[in-house]
View 1 (cartoon, rainbow, N blue to C red):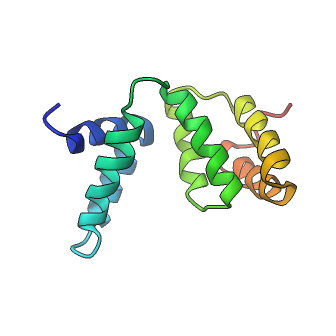
View 2 (cartoon, one colour):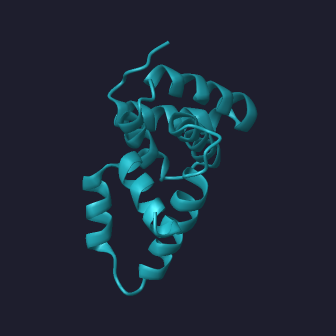
Length: 124
């Protein structure tokens, strides 16, 4: 890879899917171009591209963090989890951890989002 940006684009595309990345790039403006580059270089090129966790594990960690924090970006990562082989039953287990360590309301909201974006799959 020529740069962290190139590495980030490769990982971002593999995880989120080419269609999502193309849509995001098409919606980019002068206002957020530098920020989009920053995300690609740091989140995708510096963190997601690190070698010591596989993408499935990184996806589950990300889902747990976003669920615990109640962030809307959880929906994106729930959908993306399918691209890298995460089993919805694994997401259920992560959300149980969220309930214990971050609170039942956070997990309840995350389960609602998961049912929307995973089609109700993964029932225990």
